[in-house]
Amino acid sequence: MEDHSPQLEDGFTRIANELFEAILRFGFTQRQLLILLSIVRKTYGFGKKEDDMSASQIALMCSMHRPHVSTVLGELERMKVITKSAGRYGMVIGLNKKHASWLPLERATKVGAEPAPLALVHPSTSTESVQGCTKSVLVDGVPNWYSTSTESVQVDSTESVHTKENLPKETQKKGRARRAELTFAGWLAACKAANEKPIPNDDPIFDYADKQRLPIDFVRYAWLEFRRKCSDNGKKQKDWRAHFRNAVRENWYGIWFDLNGDYQLTTRGKQVKREHEEAA
Image (cartoon, rainbow, N blue to C red; front, side):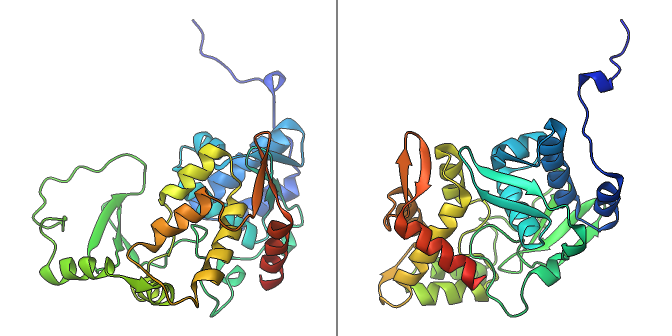
């Protein structure tokens, strides 16, 4: 039996050489490049300028975790490499062909601006490479070793690795302190001091939104209202993240409505969207 030989007759992706070369020389990270090529495949590969796709679909195409896809899509949007809007099944995404307008990530993120509260940018952690792995300094200064691939890394001994059981006592106390009741402003300050995102990449709310086909932008709008409502009310919570998840699941602020399985913005939702775009 002969090996399968791919043929143009079975389908091909047509892209201008100038645009393809711009992608090659721009200096995208590996994740950015994989997701960008997935978008090219889903659009130009079907003779379309844009396509309605979900983060889960892209994650499946390039063998990446869905939260990482959501993060990189936010980066590429701010870098003006892609266009993104709410769609029926996820997001309507297209490639911005005007490559001269693309921005490096460091320029796309305003200096001194508040980091994106949701999983839209990578946390600023120092990294160094050791024997094919990356060392990422976590919130408590505890090194975490993980492979650059999605495969698991086997560790021969846990003596040199901090686990929940052998964390330094001061670190354990720090973890317990985070569970104390805090005001919303106090919690945000604690997150910033610990170099944590208020809503991290792996927060369950993203899985919920994906399963419900709730556009990620709608979750962002819910965060804006949540932050506005909670910043000055003085109330304290032990778990503000769980509180936000409830706000999204129950649509506290009436930002969207379900039209036969298709989520649409309400009048209030459109107003929040405009406010968000004007502030960007």
